[in-house]
Amino acid sequence: MALFAVFGNPVEHSLSPQIHQAFARQQQIPLIYQRRHAPLDGFTRAVEDFIQAGGIGANVTVPFKTEAYALADQLTPRAKAAQAVNTLFWRQGQLWGDNTDGEGLIQDISVLQKFDLKNKNILILGAGGAARGIILPLVQQQPAGLTIANRSRHKAQQLAQLFNVQSCDLDDIKPDYDVIINATSGSLQGQSLSLADGVLAHAQMAYDLMYAREPTIFLQQAQEAGCHNVIDGLGMLVAQAAISYQWWHGFKPDILPVVTQLRHEMQS
Ligand code: ATR
Image 1 (cartoon, rainbow, N blue to C red):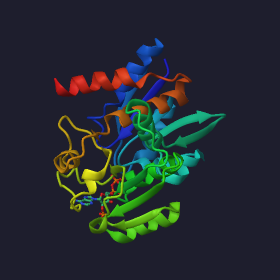
Image 2 (cartoon, helix red, strand yellow):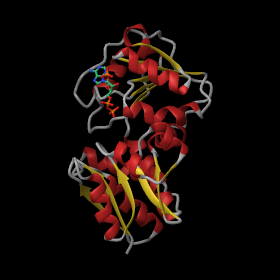
Image 3 (cartoon, rainbow, N blue to C red):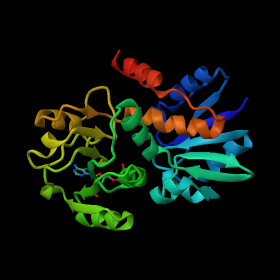
Image 4 (cartoon, rainbow, N blue to C red):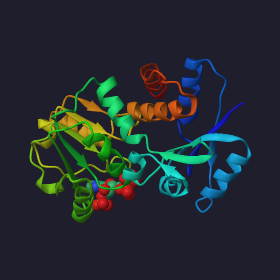
């Protein structure tokens, strides 16, 4: 039977096996999908072992996405733009790397939330790896504008220059944005962001790339500010997995029932 896995450290809490098994049930195929904990200094070796064992496709999560980017023989344009790889697959004897995170975000917003990003003014909070991974797919939606704001100003400026978008300071954000995407790790650390009053209230959508059982700190902040449409990253998680699945199996899974199932399991 074909072998698949997610590599990470830690990886024990990854929902990827559940998600991929749910997709395999939709396609009615048997599937082996493992969590593989790689040592911090042993990612390449772990992938080699996996290939030896018959592995034909893998997801890669924190902290190995940059190493996976370096390991791949070939890269998709969005993986090149992200400088990070979360999906590995073989084509004609070459190891390909894709980054499906940004496209997963787009799928969630456009298909599940039924929200059209075209001509919208988008703000990304944060300028780390998570932010970098979503910029190109967002720009491809032809928004009216895209601005990056970050606590460390120079990182926002560098990223904005690279992708030919705007940047601004975190404490100088105008209430001009239709969609605000939190790509900082603030929610993970339980820290709220210092944003001017009105910025979140003005937004039609506040989106956190993180997800949790309860609304994240950022989404709570948005709700308290008066934003009524707050979305966490669970849909993005399932959608990015679906794109990986399609590379490996040539089958496009239905993401909505899987998001619904995971949400139910998380809250019970
Ligand atoms: P990731 O790969 O998850 O993006 P990262 O590359 O370490 O992780 O980036 C984390 C991002 O969250 C950065 O943009 C960071 O801002 P700095 O560049 O100023 O460090 C941002 N961040 C983390 N905690 C934050 C907080 N409490 N307030 C504002 N920004 C925060």
